[in-house]
Image (cartoon, rainbow, N blue to C red; front, top):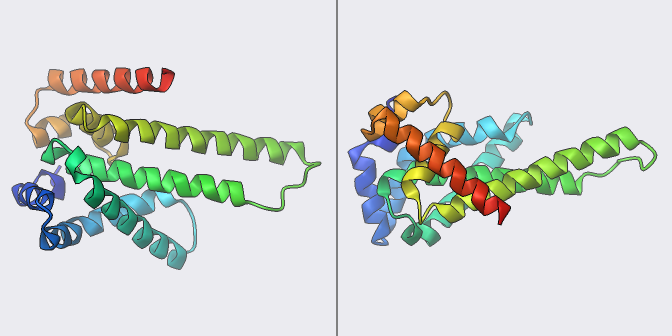
Length: 190
């Protein structure tokens, strides 16, 4: 899997961005904007092209601002792309939840439509809750959360891809994935 997040140049940019260099953030944004935009559009769902383009730009900018404000929380520079994708996915979930809440036109007498709406809203709220937990766990467990994020949020990503990209053994990938799932479940149950 050849992508921008396994590049040494990208890791150097993340390191420079940590040192509050605006030009590093600009270069990092340019370097991964196309990849992140494709990732973002995949989750936005079917909307008209102009709206999808504008929403993608908004979400990317919000995600990068969040990353800029919280870069000190990221302990492992190699986890940057998994981290930013998790932030993007959370932003999309928040927008979806807000859109569902703002929906109008549900007829109070139409119980099936109301049940469907309540189910969608519950799923959206749960997605936001899970992503909040992942972002909360990232600083303490960057390797586990990165493996979890890559496998769950990358398009067609397999454990073998992570083995090659991060230079990990298959056993380590699965161990970190199991640990991530355990940590997420534990935090959700608290």
